[in-house]
Length: 193
Image (tube, rainbow, N blue to C red; front, top):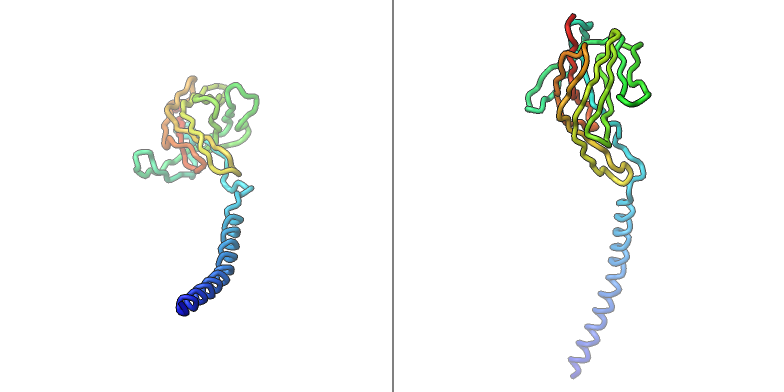
């Protein structure tokens, strides 16, 4: 019986000591957990560019050759170097919109054209040397949630690029995936006169 009382007192002391020793550990655990939660606070600033454009280059024997070129990865996985030309006097507008994307007073060798996120068809009017062509881009839209701060972006996949008019000879889709990357997506060939 004496041994049992002694053992009980020892257990209660050890228990109190263990319980007292656990207080700093519990306090430390709460402190670490609260710091982690503060560190996981959502970012209030979007650091990703929300500009999503279809990048177009121009080619044609009747155009002034440019020293510009771009090395790109084609959808097939192969690498290609695309040389393009500088166009003077080309005006580009979105069809059904009042704003001019590129006025005819500037010389350009590449253009960044916005695709419509609300429909799968984007159209642009190109005016060059008194003639007009309509560029018709068929594409799929894919809405991607980026973060709370950035919201959703609409990425596109090009299906087809057609034209109606007189000075565009043909088009070539170089990279169908239109994301925030600065890839070259479409080449427009002008007729040789």
